[in-house]
Amino acid sequence: MLFGIVLLSFSVWDVIVGFPGGAPPNSCPDPAPIHQRRINSTHVGIFFPQSMATSPYKITTSASRYFNGSMIRVTLKADPGDYFRGFFIQATRANYALDRGDRPAYGTFRPADTNSQARRCRSAVGKVGGITHTGNNNKTEISFDWEPPRGCDLGDIQFVATVVRAYSEYWVDVRSDVIKPSGFIGDRGLLCQLYVNPYSKILQRRVLSALRNIQTMQQRRGTGSGSLATQG
Image (cartoon, rainbow, N blue to C red):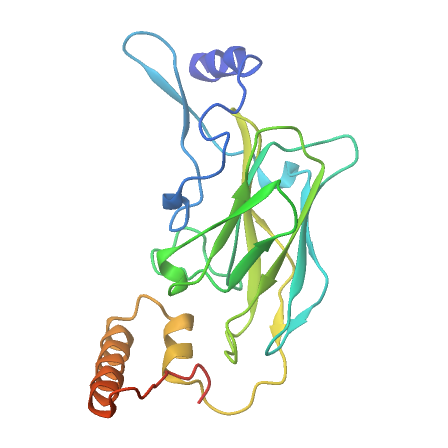
């Protein structure tokens, strides 16, 4: 109980000082921040995430389905009278646990204004797999665009956010409704399979082998070109 009281007494003085210019790149695999405060010379207290039952934030989307070449407008919004200062959002597999080590990050985020910036994620197979804030000013709403990989059926996806109101007050696992694929035909191509399961060692080896074969063919042709299709 004393530990909780000490943390509470500090919370009124805290502001976002950890990453005022945006979440760091290592937020991709684990978007839950560790916010801590020194209590005395020997003890450090940790501010745990707030209960999702108290979350004043919502993620809405301009569409409930995505298709080849589509662009979805994503909006993070606070309840009336509330605000947030920091955030980190990814598109990932629907209903997939946030702490799963093999959780993928999907697609490309495009900022709509100067209040957000894209983050590259290893699990996004070279694409821009996340988006975060650029400053720690109070915000009530922010929007940006998301584009899926060309020709790739990712299955059902969700947008997942960590939202920070203050250093001692943040919510993890704020989710949008499920977004479903539409209009995709045929089996997934090799590169698309890797988008869907970026941590698969077997798929990684198959893609590298295919790229080496393409490179070999290009060298033999001199000026030839090749590519890996995302859709089979």
